[in-house]
Structures are given as structure tokens and as C-alpha cells.
Image (cartoon, rainbow, N blue to C red; front, side, top):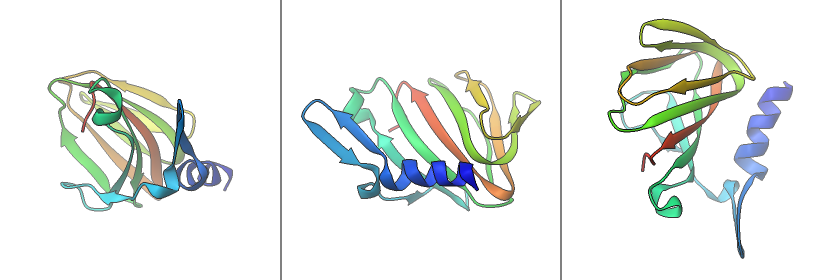
Length: 131
């Protein structure tokens, strides 16, 4: 699956390039989401690296698992769907998630994401930073 390979390339062969420094994404561990079973995160750019302005994360949601309904009171979030499929419920409206979809989730708006049968792979960005 071509899109799956793209996600794996980000995860395993990608890198953060900074003046005088490169950080291979393969060196950044996957961590379990603290609240949602079947959801893992790879924190590519953290608040520390951006001075708290933004953070970037790869998100891997196992088949038929979900990021339950929640709100980020003070930060906006974007989702860029890289692979898989699923649904985002954004303030009560259903958005079909498939490769190529970009979704903007403003601060203080409830949302949840459910992966389809093949799982869901997202590039999530937070402004200001999540962690």
C-alpha cells in the first residue's frame, strides 16, 4: 500500500533538519496515548524545540480504535491524513478521513477520531504546542 509506505517513510526514514543538527525520526520512540487504547504517538517536534509555539506528531490509530471525544481549550489542531481511513466527528459534523484530507480543529471545539478497518495514520500539528 503506497500510502502506508509513505507513513513508514516519515516514521522510520524521516528527519527533523535544523541548522547544524538533524534528528532522525527513527530515533524518536512511539509512545502510547495516555487516555486512548490503540493510539500511539511519535512526538516529532516538541514544545521545547519550538519555544512552545507549535508541536508536530505522527499518530497511529489501530483498526477500529478511537481517540475519544475531547477538547483542546487553548490550542488549534490540524490533521493531515497520510494513510488508512476513518471518521472525525468535529463539533457534531462527520468528516470522512482518507489519504490527502486535511482537517482544521479550532481551539475549544469538541472532536473525536475513529479509525477504519485498516487503521488510520495522521500527521497532527498543534498551535501552541501540545507538549
